[in-house]
Image 1 (cartoon, rainbow, N blue to C red):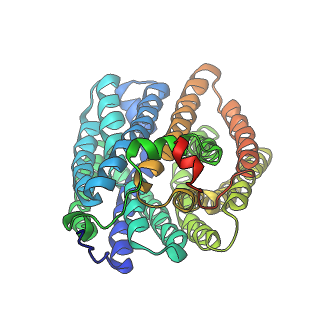
Image 2: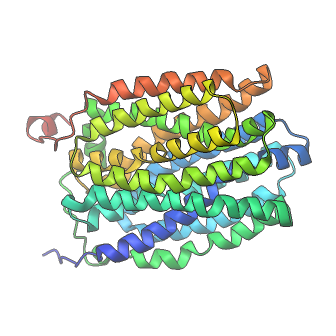
Length: 406
């Protein structure tokens, strides 16, 4: 007889989960501020830095699959603790890497794996298992908004630290701050994983994967999320250097990234709320199309601090608003038993896009002396993502004959 444990309270899940996402996402959103200090001090090219961050995004996405599997089976809190320790170690390694290879191993692989255990796929699994379906999209919006608040909170803090104590010492301070995620993880210890398991699993991992990857709507969600990663990581990492190249003061970039984080709190929360009421595919299509329009207008307008801040505010509303809607759609279609794992696969597609966005930004800049081509690619991909989201079927999958073939 299976003992059924009482789930965690929604308040506890949201407070601890949001705090962890705030710290993890807040730190990583400011990495673009280190591009010029590190490359100038070390004598590296922008492609050297961009490639390491690209590897970070790829490692984050790939490791997220397995972090999700482990979290679904053994609980999220152990995964988060390991992720926090790796995050701290990676930041220290990032500060003292003396070669591009070592920088790629620490800033790239180590921090990427750490982010897999401390961000959305793992946290959303806890939310899916402990929050009822009628509030799930809203709760995921809260967690995504926390990541945006982390950007608003941490980017100016990181900029301040770099300017006042130096870029290496700033990374060491962040390494200490990352350890705060360890005690927060204890608030996400789910009783079900110590009481025989409260989540009924009608499928094995292999069956769940076959079902998802044979389902066209899952493929379309992955395609759209690829574009999301391309756009936001290219902008987040390369926009500070783009603005400085155009003659704007360094603090403009810091304020712009902080403004993205601030307005994204509103955008992600609104997306989570709307996801309970409207078709998620329509919300996603609007977000991707609106991003393309915003980028096109930004490139055509005169470049001033004012236009930068207006662009940042608009992009912020659209920045991570895809996250709660996409993950809520996965939960709605496939259920929550394997939610962290399936979210991890969708997020891996996002991170492949992130890899391409950040790496192409550095590669094409070094070859052409301009970011223009990558901006144009970001616009075209946004239109494409809007189109591929429209045919998605977001209703619960029927597991009759389909499940037998899967």
